[in-house]
Image (spheres, rainbow, N blue to C red):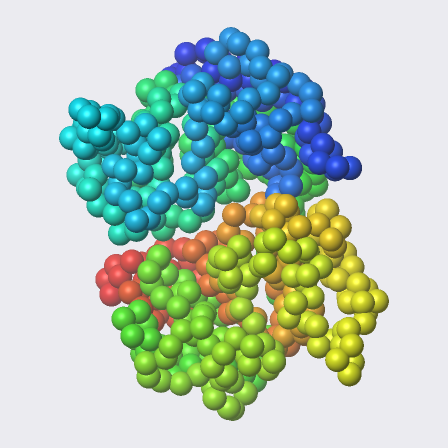
Length: 508
């Protein structure tokens, strides 16, 4: 257990420590003698590849899972295991990437859910509830931003996240777990989030911060613990390490080049988008795509990136304009598009890319059943061989075709989405945020597979909120602002500053 000094805000008092935690799922050893600790007034980052054991450890701390062995120390007391109610009562709360809010209820109702103030005649004291909510929002610096009586469904993503944090504070949480809190936020909300996190540290909260964005670790955290294959690799003071060392600890090898060298030859135009308008969201968009080319779509949240991606496979109603694929009007349904080789890797893999309660084999096979069927009869042998081949190619872990997809880590779920369409031998692949919420090792692997597609003459559209990803992968980047195409930047002129100026309408 590390006892190194951390932030000057830290009291040196341990709020939490876990020691020698073991957890098995069947024959899978998810955690092996993992140790981790958290001090009052510090931000302790927890990093590792998808499948490293981060989620399992967090679920043990919050009482969702029972460890097979090991100890949990909270405020000086020893526990063999916790349940969710006990963890809550001990001041442990988690804010997950996927919010746990009731959209049809107000902000105040969500924040005080389960702890509503009761007044006369055993009725909810609405005045007290509003006051409690206001005080919590004021603590987060959001009292002028969020109306306690507003329905949660009407809030922005960033505002909803603040409501989640306020919910945690409503139970007097001193141990706050933040799981990929920045992954779904537009860039304009990040500064506010980081300010709130630092403020909570100043108040003496201990924060476990999980993120695949390594730069955030160095911006926010005092200490960082690295997990790999269910084991604690190291705990470091952030001031005493660097990005290269952390990545090497996470993936177990030096990551020499995140972005592979592009070797494909750009061919003929395969896609033309002419004067595309989608009511209220996208206006007069014009661009083309050539075989073997990667064209990026850049822009802030709400700029129209995802709407354009969805329109190319028939998932958005076109108000005017046209989409031409290989000289013909593009199909207007996802199934018809897939038959022609146009496929979309969606932004929200869990909602639109996977059937989570089905097996990995089911998900990989679903759009490819025609390959394994003759005269209406499915060849299970052909299907099994194809599935095993793609699992091996993409290094999906665990390599167990019949595992339920919901039990895979986020990075491996994303590999399943990519894999099912690689099996379909596409001609045009649209990637919408292909590496959101996945670790650096899995990112590098997905970049390699994107590059391999272009070598085969496949055209690629890559929509991303990560400028280094676009700059590292693309031949051209189209920049969007409020639904309009405001610029096109070629590889020789790439720079983050230039793209951000266009994306934020600076000097536009």
